[in-house]
Image (tube, rainbow, N blue to C red; front, side, top):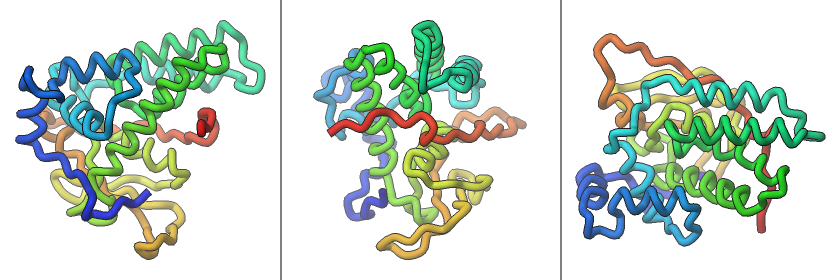
Length: 235
């Protein structure tokens, strides 16, 4: 959960732009996105690094726009009886999740909900979305260690920060901005690790802030717990 800074892959903007805009590059963005959308399981850590952070330079990246489809998907998920779900309720949930992924294709929250495919017997799409979710979370974690402002985890959406903590069963409090590019999310209960006692984590949200309209007030996404809808564990 806490990668060493010596091995951290901090996104370098010039490199991201150069690699994802060059049609001769193995990380040319249209090709990466096609592979991601097709469920290509041969994508590497490097592929995901350029896929995730390269999205910040795509026209579709609008982090400050409300995602009403995500709200709809979450509301539908709250009505599904996952102990005894109906075929109709699962199909309705999957349709809503796919609509929401159009605006936020790397949302761990949405990719986690897509495990509903498994309940319908579609193990292929369940596995695809499980792999996507873990790869996105790993990409964010690889960008730093989250322990200091200077080693913050880099995110594309505020919600991705909370999803990362929820995925690791870290219960968090209200986030606060500590600089023009970094926010701090305190934990409700400190955790002890090899690095010491951790009270919270830092996230670099500069990509979101970069296109912030004058006078815009950030709205916090609703909280989310992965535990209630944990996907199948794969070996």
